[in-house]
Length: 236
Image (cartoon, rainbow, N blue to C red; front, side, top):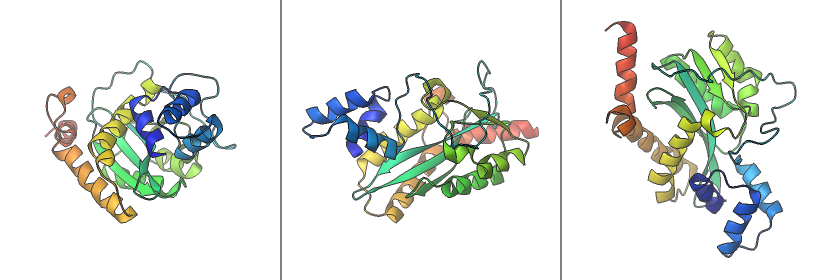
């Protein structure tokens, strides 16, 4: 699973057969059925377009995609979220994060050993205590189409936007975040415990927000851009 995650981070467009070939060439005697099962367990899907990319839980409402052709011009205009797989020395956890598109600021994050919605709600509540976006974008995963998740957004008059799983252009900012976190933090570590993973990820996200300069932001940090945007909106 760690090798699959590393390869997916490098080549998210690889399908089941290429992933299987990758592992076989690395000396692992796996077939495509096992690779498919592991990728599904990790929540990883190739990003090329194909029919029925995302299958929400029956009964959950799916909202239309609202961001096609929309310029991103200010903080808190669009927030986005996603879940990714984090390998440990023994086992793995899931990482959820919420990102402001304009500043790339990570508003909140959480870790869980399962894909139940509660850890996503925990981070969402934390982010909404900070501020609220005009639009909240996600894929059609069961966590994000659940009444508990969408209800929190609707209660604050936040427009909900949903794209199909695997549409790279719709999730590009979060995909870039995952790539950065994994290459600069996760793949350099071998977390022994969940507590260690949470502590180390917490230190990294503080660095990412407060210290890591981004060329795309004019060599400013996400935190600096986000705070400047808040002050501008407040007329300070």
